[in-house]
Length: 138
Ligand code: NI
Image 1 (cartoon, rainbow, N blue to C red):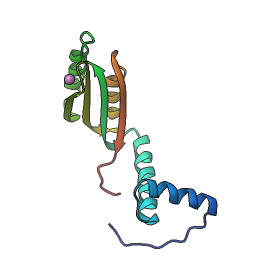
Image 2: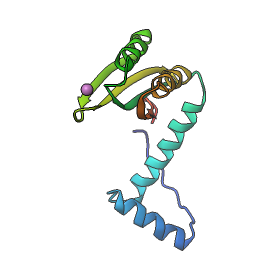
Image 3: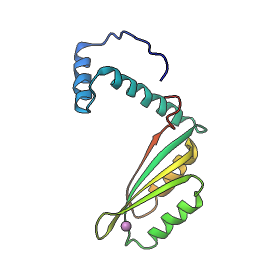
Image 4: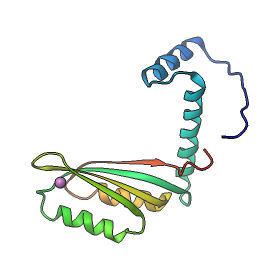
């Protein structure tokens, strides 16, 4: 962390009460950390919108492994992008359903493309891409 700067923020009382309730429900013990996290979130979001920005993402997939050739398709896609997929976690949720969480690293456009390819594969019931930064500069 760099040098700390103190700022004053004028904010509508009703809005501040809602903000306080929100951050309390999320476990923040003070406003400063909540503000910092909001700012970092916006910075990551902004970086993520530039196609060439280096990002890290997790792709979460839920699918029925009985769907014909689905396992093979998902594995083929992961091998196609092997140099971007750092790790894969597989959990057998029940008799039918599997959960996979993949850690994907690369430029924002590549990470998005990989996630879209996986999530849009027929038979995937739910998929979600979460993007974060490397932590550097935040
Ligand atoms: Ni499984």
